[in-house]
Image (cartoon, rainbow, N blue to C red; front, side, top):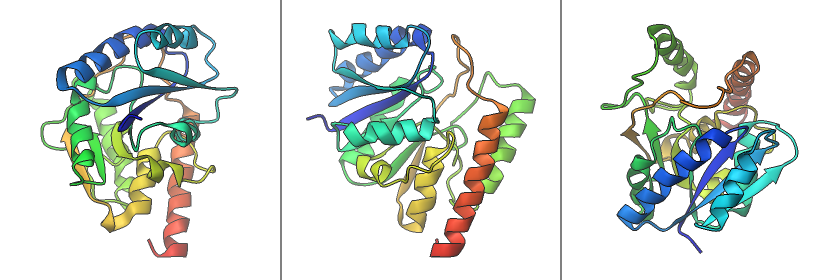
Length: 234
């Protein structure tokens, strides 16, 4: 049993799989880390699953195939339910999240010093070098309402490490992409969170999943979190 499972949700990411896993397993070898990689695929129509299958013969890689695309958050929760590791790192498949930062996310959990570690664009040393000014402004504005539920600088980060049980406890009604925010809100002030800086790079291959529907899901998530806070005293 591995100490950590790297959970990677996918939807039509065939062009990125080889590049991503070459970097991930180079990090594993260089730092002698104990982890497996678990993909959770939301009904890709390209060769994503075939690309992953080819790696299963070479490394500790597995895949959970889902029949529909009902959101990244639900996919990640489903993967956490079968993960082999006590801890999980959630990261995107599009190479925007640098695998080279994995040791900095994993080690604070293994030594018990932190409950959640975030690969942060907005802590000191973090950056988004490929983004135009308009996107940088839009992203910063989007974090403002999320900061009502947490004090971390990058509450919408999709690259984070946490104990698997925290993911497993999330309800099946979670919408959209911002599962890290859900954990931050649920954990409240008792959750020990560390942010480590990352350089968030734009994808080189494939198509962004950002859409008007994703924005609406985020707004709905904020509304649900606000209701929970009022009802439970978060």
